[in-house]
Length: 297
Image 1 (tube, rainbow, N blue to C red):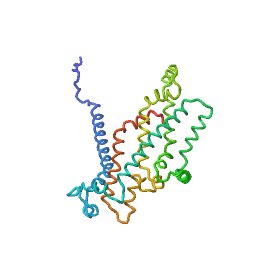
Image 2 (cartoon, rainbow, N blue to C red):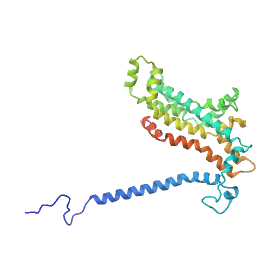
Image 3 (cartoon, helix red, strand yellow):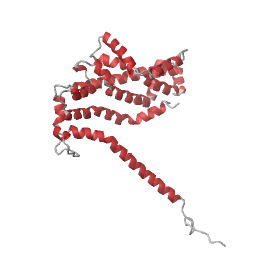
Image 4 (cartoon, one colour):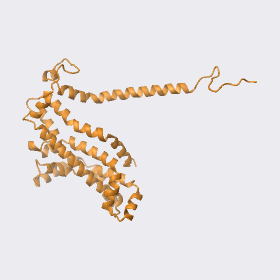
């Protein structure tokens, strides 16, 4: 007659098969955290260099001996940047903010309307129009650069906010994202709106837009960052100092006869603050918006 064993006891000579698995899981988690921490540090190195060199004196930046932070932090460099008569930094930041906001709002409006029309309004050539929009994504920007400049110049929009904003108000990529999202949008909500007597416009504005906030936030974040970082078009159109954007203003620090390094680093650090704030506030919507847009379909 065999002796019974109590629950939870282990017979001599046997081993717990769960322990090696748990150990491997813990090692894997620890290794993953170490890798993520190392990648995070590498990602933060450029930001550290901007802050470190922006608050250092000129001789500390060019010195062969490296220190983690200079002994004296020169906060006056920030004031010196905005007092520099050669570079209108405050005006450039304002222009970039206006252009980025106007471009973002305009792109969200026009691209969402186009995407909703392609996804929901039935007409004969809907697919052909959609394929034409997709085809514009394959055209290099350099091909349309000269015709766009000639058109803007003929309208007298050079060195004006109109010339910097209006040609960039529509994005084929944003239209594609919205069309993919609206294709999978629940038709039941729209059918209920139809029963209440709403047309396409009121259905779009009252039903679709409030339920599409993640994709609006995701596309808006991408468009805002792209508009803020735009350089070539503002460089050509913004020929007057009053029409400079922050990227054009940054380029003047490297093209001047005398390179002012500490002002260059301060200006670069100041210019990325709005992008960091926008990304931190809306980062959770970027992944959610792309997932809900059906881009993998």
